[in-house]
Image (cartoon, rainbow, N blue to C red; front, side):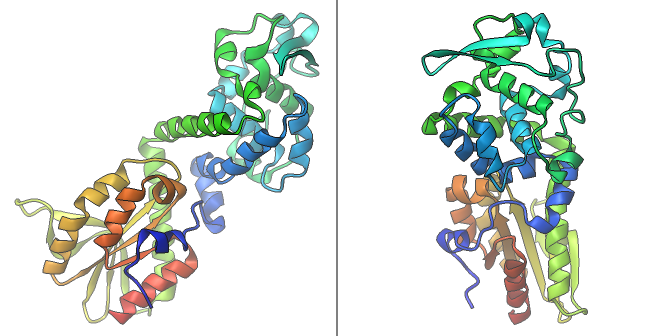
Length: 340
């Protein structure tokens, strides 16, 4: 079997998005994994739902990836209008006469009658069913959710309203319906912004979750007398002249005391961590080999495979074994560890 792979070989095995069996746990920490998993379906729907301003409602009924809450959450994320900001708006009749918004779209004047949010009501995440638990549960669009979606789609195009400036500036998605290139740029640009906002504790927790996933499947694929540890060190591998030990995401030790350092990187949007790992990969491999050990990488995620291609290619060149994140791929890694 081949263990040292090229980027093209790795791409053929990649799953790109969060594995189903840990998606629920990931969404409990952040809704971003679920949204990025359904991002392409969301963009595709907006590209084709351009017959009328409300054509998207019918399109959702035939989409197996997008529930009503997930579609609405996508709109809230890319417009950067969350439940807290929305909850300050009702009643919409304060901004739109008789609760009707008139807007310009495709050269014509259209109007939409708000059916619930023209009156005082809650638009918090839980009320809109876009908190993490309800996102996972799925469900159909409610009347309130349709009202909010129309506001987020066409708020900037309104011609008879006094909506707040943040609505007028950010709610432009409806003007891009059917425009393939513009939609791609707008949605993906905003998800890069969102991914950066996920930093700190949440980002670290998601990384730990993926490392736990690798550890769990390695333990199930290796004999019971092998030792698999997260956040550990290889003997005699240092990253400073002062003798500071180099930390690895996962360290595996065989019964014959053969050590393997494993680095895990799963990114669904751009992230500079993979570029740092690429810069360090040659010297890290040299240090690991000099100490008599092996270095392996688990690399996946659409950001890594499709965007940070140069960085991943460099890592592949300086890796003894490179695999993607699926169960089958981790079994492939286990086979390499046993063979060596």
